Amino acid sequence: MDIAEPLLAAHRARFAAVDALLPPAAPPAEGQRLDVATADGTRITGVLQRHRSAPGDVTMLWAAADVRQLFPYFGATGTEGVDLLLRALKGVLEAEEIGDDSSCVVLWPSRDAEAIRAFLDHGLVPLSAVGVRTAPPVGAAPAVAVRRARPDDFAAALELAAATFDYTGLVAAPRRANTAELLAPALRDALAEDEPAVWLAEEDGEIRAVAHCAWIDATPGSEAAELLPPGRWGYVNNVVTAPGERGGGFGRALMAHVHRELDRGGASRTYLYYNPTNPLASVFWHRQGYRPLWTSWEVRPASALR
Image (cartoon, rainbow, N blue to C red; front, side, top):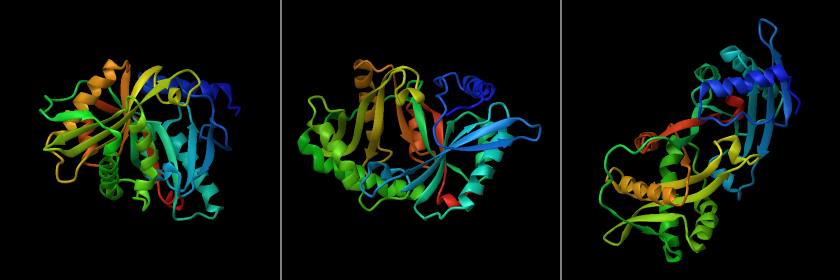
């Protein structure tokens, strides 16, 4: 999609200034244009995309069934520019039928405080974040047995992975009734590989924590390169400690092992998604050396946008 070159240059300059770890801003998104102007006449643009998911799509684990995602291009206009674009988006939504299982989403650099002010004013909340590991963990890891998962661990690992959504369903995206069904294919495939990226922490022969990871290459033109600097990244997809065992050191020991394995495998860095609204995850991952790079601001249902 064509966007005026001065605005696109200002957009790229904003990304470069707000966080040195951000990759260069991606090319303009395709979608419905929202064109507005600030009080001094500066023209800015938003692009609106709509994504619909079926009940069996794995995206339903973290997303609404009907998502409207805004890509803002507001350059140096700061809070005023974001405010105007969100007002324009609200105008679009008021002309549509909006269901309950819907959302408005803006994925934006976490350190852009001027944008945060506008997001909050319009009722969006920081429901998820992309965290990158930039420092060593705080404190030594407890002595806990950690091993690679095997195919015969599937049932126990799936039960534990699904159980954590009982908690995250309270503090982040609502839990889906078919959560285990949505989680199962990727976990089964990982366990069937020669070198599965799934690790378990055990005590007395019982699984206390699970980490499901993967490799992601952020190469030019790839989807990952829009979020991450170039390189081979270790992706921490899902980490779960059994209810009743949280705070016992199993997660710390497991991740110490996982980070060593990912580093040995050639990871330039590691990243993950976590919920800033989760009072357990937000503390745990910061102590593991992660900090937010991107934040997904969201309002559900979409009609609740102010």
